[in-house]
Length: 112
Length: 109
Image 1 (cartoon, each protein chain N blue to C red):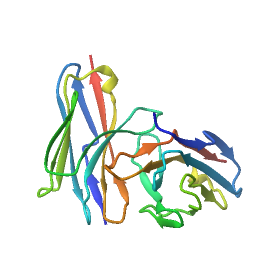
Image 2: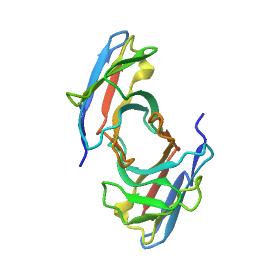
Image 3: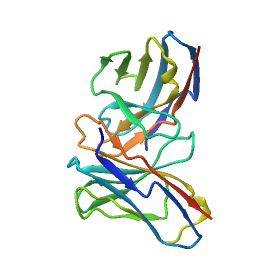
Image 4: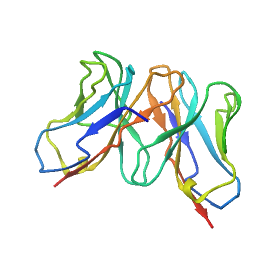
């Protein structure tokens, strides 16, 4: 069973609010990822990290930021939420050998 | 940049065999993976091909041809519970893990 956790599972928030989506894993994986996925659609990579103090932007332009101060923790922050941010956000981690990524259960964000 | 192409939808009957193809374009290719995602759930890992050839895991097999930038997932003895979305994914030299657009598999009785 995957030991990667996301909180909150569901969040409804007003426009303009600052929010942080939490992601933690206890597997000691160095690579972590954030994806955005609308229902029934593809996963878009928005941020990734290959170790502590390393963060990179993915292919999908995003107004979010991430940090990686500890191996196990990879939070994603939206400084000012907008209705266009309404989506599901999935966090994943892997040690890269092979590329078996473990996913959290996701955070379903609704911005009203 | 990277791109992966998969058929958007496949329908098959219970007990049949189905193949889901994936073609990719990426820099610094490090392997092709497959994931299954049921509606409302998170993706779960199915298989990985780092080298050319066929990998078999129970009812599921995956194939890779690096020279053709092509792979497929083969599902045998289909069951109703196999109805889900299937994603191929590639990792490049910068540790990016990129997913295809997904193939929705519908298994009918």
